Image (tube, rainbow, N blue to C red; front, side):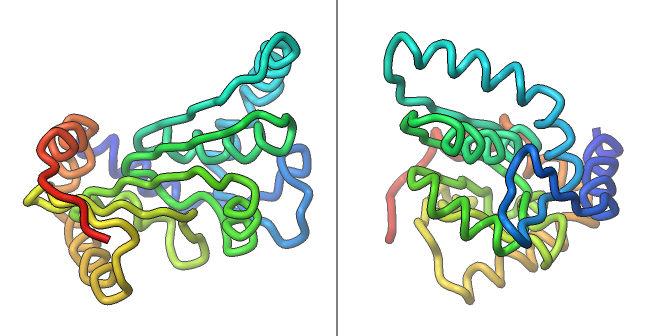
Amino acid sequence: VFFQYFFVVCLFFFSSRRRHTRYISVTGVQTCALPISSYMSVRDELLQVIKDQLKEKDYHIYLTGHSLGGALATLAALDIKKETKAKITNYTFGAPKVGNKRFVKYYNKKVKDTYRVVNDEDPIPSIPGPTFKHVKNYALIDERTTIKINPGLIERIEKGLEGLWNTVSMQLVKEHSSDNYKLLLDGIQEIED
């Protein structure tokens, strides 16, 4: 299992940035190669199914995903929003960053209902590096199962350093697992703003 996660981390770090004009045609927007390539492989069929359903009735579409699935949900949320008039809500868990600053600005403007849940010791949300950024509404869950919404800069730096340590240790497998996210969410004690 560790090598599976190590492989994904390497793919994110060393994959080239790509601009898929079929996906988004905003000047300067870049996305990470692994999630955009995966999304583009199903994009046309997904959009056709959604458009067909929206012909019959207006739907509120909820997207969610863990890890790479969260990255894919983020890409799909923006794409569905710009291709349809559907109301979109996106929840991700332990998702890596998928786009540069311009991507995030464009995404945050278009997809208002987004929630990024992160285990404070999970290193995956810190990849692929500083060129890429996260979309809005950050919910940090710590080992005491306390959730903090949009924590301050100092706390984010502390948690980023912990995540970096976990990247080089076997703790990565435990902290990033979807089972661990479920345990943390099941045990939430309080919400702090």
